Image (cartoon, rainbow, N blue to C red; front, top):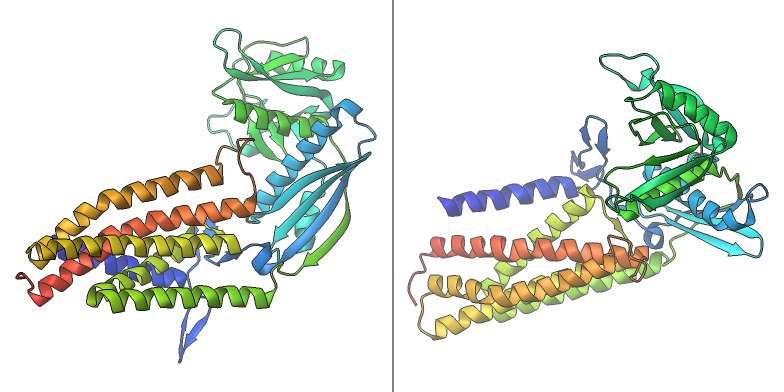
Length: 437
């Protein structure tokens, strides 16, 4: 009963993966198959494969920041803040794995933005080329069910905020965000806090809520603190974002060009051909060396490929050539796991155990080696991906793409190697009635 349930689950997952993996408008005779578009409330996912600049190309934009009204000591921070704002806007636009970096040369402050696969560059350019707008809102009329429409601008803007910085609470040492207002801003802020004691004030950047602190007391000197459960990294990011509104640096687009795939169509074709030939040789080796066991392992690898591509579409993962390399490498490691299992099975058969006993013992004894090898690789992918943006580790998008695809590939290969292949072997054993030696 349990085996039937597991086989049914494998078939169900494979069928779902086939539907998700189906390309747009694939015609089979008079029948057209197309991957669905997932829509849940405001969440929509078109399930197209996202490709990076090296595979698909995109738009490259060069912007220059006008620093004439910014003090010389604040210009680097102002440029970093402008970069953060552009990153937020690009994320809102839905561009996957953009490349955004700053370049300072003499008195020129530039931001270089590469947007993979942007179909409407004019819309993206109008979005990222705006100066940041920081505004403070309150709710002058209390309502039982407040909505966004009930918020009203207070007249306090980023021009009234002199600067924000990360500070630490003197009682518990936790990170806080300090706000220092100009004399005119201090007057406005004093009026706002006086009428909103015990109420919330919303701080918005480009119409998006950054934070919504509750006013504890009237603040008249223009120096305020936002406390909460911030980590140091979160507090730093919030300060950079706030300062982008406090130091409204005008951004001008000085160059925009469409860029072709950096690898070129011929290089991509050769890379895919090499990968396909390699996988074909691996499948042939498994079948010739292990017979029907190898064939079942190949079926497991096909299911692994379908599941992996489905996950790439659902996340979604932006595929670059390093990412494809991570995917192919994880397939090789999945084959390695099958070889360990099959060799253990051979050892148990030589000891005189029947097929079923050898299979169960082979999977059990090989698991420790498979687990240790894959955990070591998963740790490596964690270091390469650098999820916490540690400065002493890699921050390259290409390397992160490789790490992410390798991580997902290993996780899925463990599932297919231990669950899928094992249950397929059990089903074959039951069908053949192979209980003897």
